[in-house]
Length: 101
Image 1 (cartoon, rainbow, N blue to C red):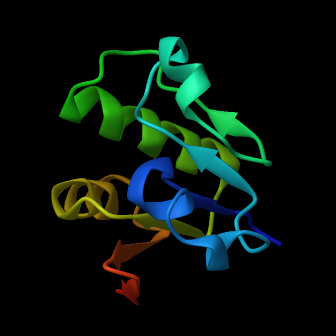
Image 2 (image 1 turned 90 degrees about the vertical axis):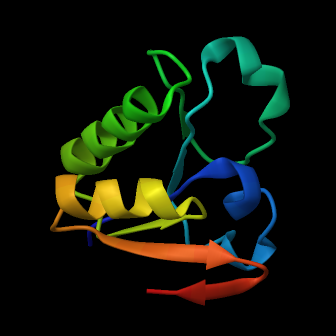
C-alpha cells in the first residue's frame, strides 16, 4: 500500500486524528528546528531554504520518491503547487479542524 504523509505545523501537530493514519511527516523546517518537532513517526526535514518554492520542491520530491497516495497540508498556495507538481498524490487541505479536498 502507498504511504500517507502530512505536513507538521497546523496539520500533524494540531490534528491527533491523523496519528495512526500518517506514515511520515514532511516539514518545511530545516534541521536547526529539530527541537520544535514532536512526532512519533519519521520526519523529513527541508534541506533548502525556508522559502515557499524550496519548501514545496522538498515536499514534492519526498512525495514523488515515496509514491505517497495522500498528503495533508494546511497552506492553500502550497496545496495548489503540490497538486500541479505531484498529480498522482491526493493533497488534502486541513483547516480549523476540518478536512477538505
